[in-house]
Length: 279
Length: 279
Image 1 (cartoon, helix red, strand yellow):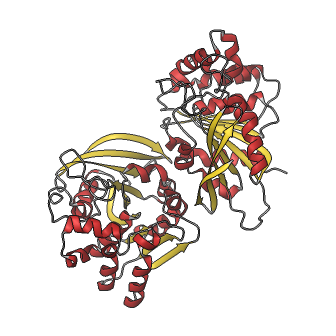
Image 2 (cartoon, helix red, strand yellow; image 1 turned 180 degrees about the vertical axis):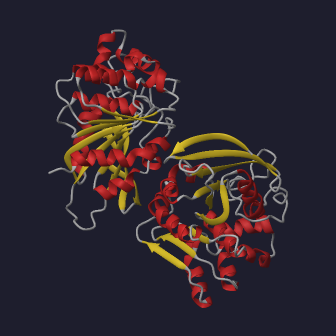
Image 3 (cartoon, helix red, strand yellow; image 1 turned 180 degrees about the horizontal axis):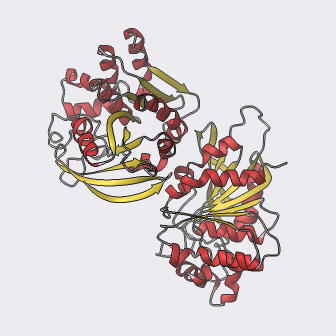
């Protein structure tokens, strides 16, 4: 992996890397925030993986969420991948909600998507291996994300118990098998067999979970996508039925934007710190 | 003035307004952050005016600086104007450092700029009158900005003693009459008479100041524009010669980006609060 930019922020290092992804078969970029190691040059940090939403790259969260302040204070590294494979050779679509910028954190089984669209394997396996081999981080991980990335964080976290200490999401797509964004993307990437969609649906996965993990979800009540796309009530209903101690907070007046994330990212980082930093 | 968008952030209101500017003779947009008035619906807030740098609009600082967190906590409103007159009828230039997006907070005397490029009068008179007549704010003001906007904050603050309680700047263009950005812009907007440039040069103004005001400046030592364009040493030398108690802080490792602003905006807001909120 190659460092392509580095900027100091909150006494730490905001970096951008480029690497040849084997899993995705293309060149990928991701951003990293590393807290200052001023006092101890061999210090290693636990990592919060942040999965971004539709149309985003690794830069939106880096620039707009203000997460580095609290990550610096708590001593947590941030790793912020892109939202899909990229490049002229990678299949794409005219819609903002399919193709590049809209990988939905799954492994596609259908053409033309199948060769590159394997974001699930990239996030679960390749990226942490790369990060842990090359950066001053431990193998203690947490995962979070926004919207499509909130869906990704919930699905990846729940399908890999023990891989992440804690899971959180802002405004996640909670039940993609029954919303327009999910139906469009899953039809294209996974095909017509709706049963194959269920392993990428947080509500289905939670209702079948055999292990309970710490999960925090924040949702704005004035979110323009709340009823049609996000469906937090479906996940809450499944959690109640399963006796799963999901922590879901509804915030009056907040919408789907990064201003909502900025307002509550400190709470999410402190939530993850409780698990990432415990002895 | 017309409200064109509103988003909740840190329990307050991030708003965007559009209005017909008489001074600039065009339609202008500006952003506002108002802290929550939950406990007292008639509460009014003092205002920090933020002047942005080259190529920016009112949105860059709003989205990237993370200023709303501390503005909310301290009870300070933010008003964030655009960086020049705008529109198809407004003169422009191909360079990023002249014309639209590069108003330099002065009143142009030369064609084709003279009819619209009057950002000095807009910031000093028209905008605060509009804001104070229409929003829940007091007439206690502070002013800050970044780069070209840091130049604007210093010049406007120093030329109007009593108008602002305090002045600050990030990475300001301290001596525009002797740097490439300033020489290009002032030649175009003000013409060949270099003496007319001096009333827009912070270093000249400070050396001639008859009143001392609280000024805080933050400058990154790895700023890519430090030596050629910003010249903080010229301002520091003038301050020493004049016995002006300028507070200039040099921060190792920081560059010219919004990551630098984000890292120190809390300090600047607390600095302004000491003056804006005192009885």
